[in-house]
Image (cartoon, rainbow, N blue to C red):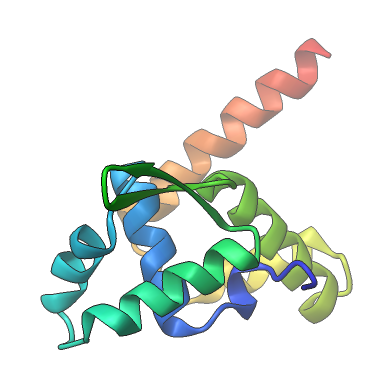
Length: 131
């Protein structure tokens, strides 16, 4: 199967990946328990989602007795960067300035987030100056 990006996964698959990333490794039951707080799902539904994620190359497993322990094959950071790059290319014509402008104009960005963004920009400037 072709490699899907994070934003191309279904809601359940993306939720499963978030849980496995948080736990670093997980059984189907552990994922089911975490998902149960949001939605009632059958064990077999979660199992099917995890098996499909394994076929797609997102997860791998090892057996411990009769239990499979699933681990991510991709990091959250790497996939986040990949999705962001796809978004920037598709929506903003590969223009990071346009993307940042839209982000800064979003009313959900508050003073704390703006201060953190400023610290990140300042840190990046220092890194570039050292190159």
